[in-house]
Image (cartoon, one colour):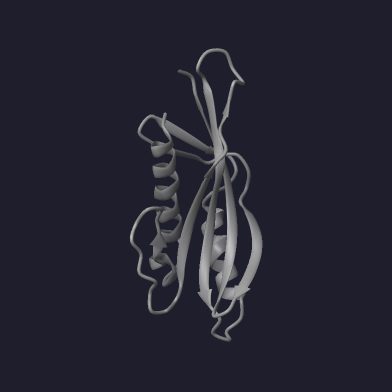
Length: 142
């Protein structure tokens, strides 16, 4: 079990969630952590923010509960076409992360422990961002 495996499972699932959307949303560019990213010409893209919140000391020995949130932030231009389309897209992506879903990378199994929460939209100058939070946990008996 490692943070790397957890992040990899979350990133892989995000790509699968986007690809499961109907066209053209299934080709939405994703900004991954630590990677160079060029904002596309249409100004539509998804950003990942990983926020681990691990807990130690709940169990005997060196067992550990890994938990945290994955923030999915949909960036959308203020193009006078309203917010319904981007809200539909972020909700479609979020539906992939249903409560109880298991994600795997290497030896790590990451479980989604709540249905995703849509935190609304924030208008910032030339774009509006739509924020979705996915909560997860994983347990390592070491």
